Every structure is written in structure tokens, then in C-alpha cells.
Picture 1 (cartoon, rainbow, N blue to C red):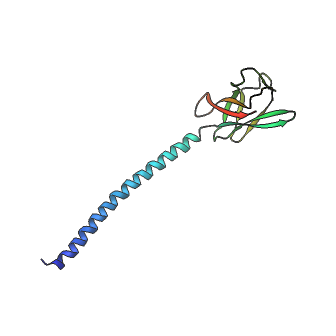
Picture 2 (cartoon, rainbow, N blue to C red):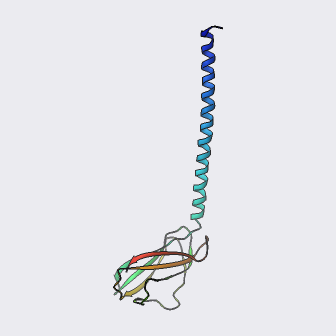
Length: 147
């Protein structure tokens, strides 16, 4: 066998080895992509069962300040209630009836307002919000707001 007869065999062998290497690399990448896609799908499915209640403040509406509670999640929230645990002195006066809370239901992007007077000298207060949704009961979130 001469050297010129070995050249096509060597080229074929290198091509074969390169093809095997690329196939293994592709399968590894494909498995990683499928895993990431599955995790993304599970996260989206989980998020679709969650409500997310946020609070914002509008100062000086109708002679009082206003807390606005909004559902930013994908799922409806039920039995929404809140408290201000940082108000230990009772200096924040809410203008709501005793039977106003828990608020029965908030759909996605719906909100409700609570007017209040703030007689404290604290610039920030913590608002603790609890609600029920398809993900779980008694879900809780705390937000610091400027009252």
C-alpha cells in the first residue's frame, strides 16, 4: 500500500471521528436545552396559579392618603387582608368599616383602595398582605412603603 492510498482512508477516519464528536456534542446541547425548556414551562405553569398583591401609595386624595392594593399576578386572589405591623402606636388610622376586610376577590390587574390618615413621624411603614390563591392559602408578602 502506498501513501497516496492511505490519504483517503485517513480523511475518512478523521471525518468519521469528527462526526461522532459533533453528534455527542449536539445530543448534550439538546438535552440541556430540553431541560431548560421544561424548567421554563414548569415555572410558567406555577406562575399561572399565583396571585401577587402589591401596594402603592397615592398621597393626598380626598383629604386623606390612599393605599392601592393591586393583583399583579396571573391568578385571582381571594380573602385579601393586610396589616401595618410597623404601626405599633396606632398612629395610622384606616378609613374602612370593620367588615371591609378580608376583601373577597381580586382578578388580574384589579385593585381596591383604602384611605388612611398618618399621624406618625415615621417616613416608612411595613404593610403585611395575606391572600389565598390556587397556589396556596395564607400566602403572605411584606412591603415597605412611604406613607
